[in-house]
Image (cartoon, rainbow, N blue to C red; front, side):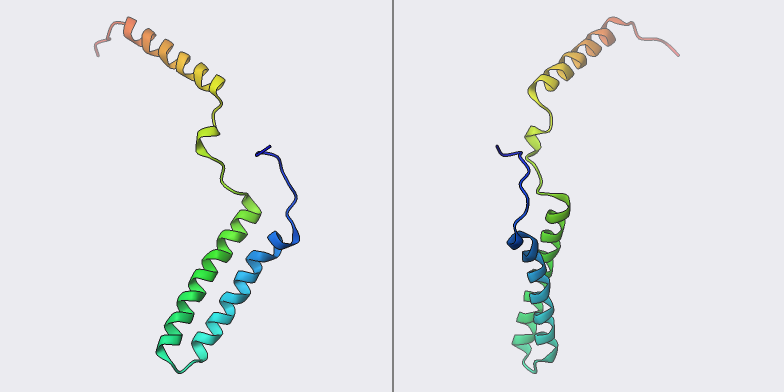
Length: 99
């Protein structure tokens, strides 16, 4: 079952924190190196790792995004379409009012 909740494992809990630790390490390396190419590489790596940490933190707190097509079930969609068609037919039957 795809929608069933499963408890996170220890690896899933600790993984995004590992990204944060690695990002901080890359920042320290970038600020302490005398080489420009290593500075640029480590700062880019720190940015990527920081973004990976932020995404992992968001997913662990908010959950993975569901597929947008499954938000409204087919029965509810049919009911909404019927209601919209009835409103459209009722609006077409009424004569326009003059102001």
